[in-house]
Image (cartoon, rainbow, N blue to C red; front, side, top):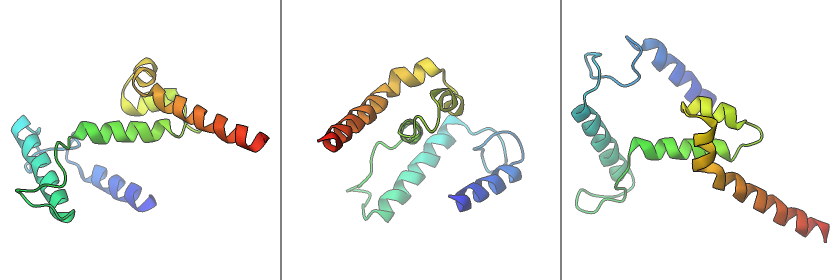
Length: 121
């Protein structure tokens, strides 16, 4: 994790402006450039996973899936991280985080209750 943080810090420091993803010349990424970027990512992931163009292993991968996965993983860390902090990291409101991800906290509470019941026997 520390290596990833160090890499990201170096990457962000080297950016010519305030945009995280840009075209090679540093200009704002167009929609078509964004689509091509994700197609390349999916193609490389499929190749690494043993898929082919005709028989992909991975399909329908979007940046939103990564965002959703990131937020889900954060929600599994509640109460070590607060809903308020998760909302700040996601750029959402606390209400939005709770509306979309509350089922994760409910699942955690259900699992904890089962373990407590087992240990009480």
